[in-house]
Length: 207
Image (cartoon, rainbow, N blue to C red; front, side, top):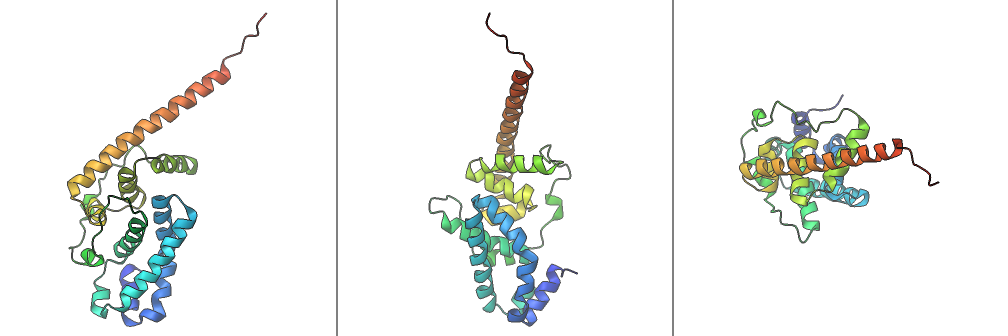
């Protein structure tokens, strides 16, 4: 049975060295998936997650048990991964904020997430892969925001904290990114229809 976030925090607060492996086992897959969607490179994603987990452990060594228990662990780990990713891209325009910033905010409001899911949600694995490929082609500002909100299921507020941007800016970025994504999907569907039509149309031989 997997531990809850609060249970993991309690374990870390009581014995960081003996229990950090539980954090690795619980979060490494989702952190790797997040890093892969950011980098679009299997090797880079693996390197970033390894560095993030080491960095997280080193940071927690300097935290008091009370400070560890107060963490929002998953959001904090995403911040570690995102910081490393951002540092690895020297020309990025995304701004970083200290790790402690995530600890100082009140509980996130679950109402931030819209009840109505976008039309882009997929019903099959193949559609999911195609959607991720299209997202990967977006300009970075849109790709990162959509990845965080729709694929990683972060709230608008969490994405705003992660990117150190106002929530209104995040909502606008996601909205514009979705319009670009829908345009890409429409183009892809049109190309498929044209290809299918050309395959069905008989070719006339010259006399």
